[in-house]
Length: 115
Image (cartoon, rainbow, N blue to C red):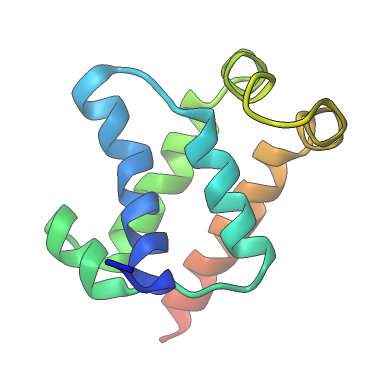
């Protein structure tokens, strides 16, 4: 095992934006993984994010919320996740994954702002 769960989660958060910056594409699987990490109450390793993005965690999450809200479309979700997930799981998550992930990200941003 190369990474802790916290490091893996932090890298996944960063990768979600970096894939778009480098390739102008969004991986629905990143959204799904982020959703699952939050859903299961996992924590991320903030120093990994700060080091990779060279910004504060607060600014990173502000950007991540905005990015998710503006760039993730139902088409991206449908095209990427329908082949990766069992059909039952796909049908269950396809309409709620963006909304719930944004809720998790906004909740995290509010938690950070209180620190």
